[in-house]
Image (cartoon, rainbow, N blue to C red; front, side, top):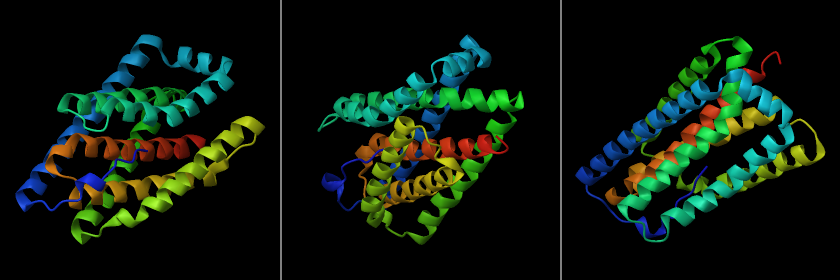
Length: 235
């Protein structure tokens, strides 16, 4: 989940500029999702589900701590890439970095979901649910035009709390359970509302790639925990 500094972007934009921004953001988002799917397909075609699961099971602590490190350090490295006054090229490198980051984060979960059913059915179910929920949340923002920027403090606090819980679970060996997954789905929904309203009301046209990174992160987090919920059933 990614927050971008909007303080320098609080400017009024014309309706035409706002329309162009929204068009660019969702075009970029579509490209990022396609790139993510292509990279995952390449990884699984190269290594296979069983090989990935075998590596994960034999190195479960290393993988778990590595994924947590990616979640914590990834956004910090991303901000280093984009800098304080990013060029167009650096913004796209920033977006590409997030595509690669989420590709790595999803590998163990996708492998488990594919192994559990022996096919892609669970993954396709998660895709459908994620797309439907994302579309509904986005439509709610666009039709109501509510500014959800007031959610920022709560989202930051809850995200920090989630990282602390995950770290504690890894350190002390307890399970977070289904309710944690449900809570993370709700948190991801909050990010979708927050980021979509910022795109609709606050970002300028030239910040379309930065806006895409924020929305892509929210979408991928939502997908991750919906797939986690489906994979955890009867398990």
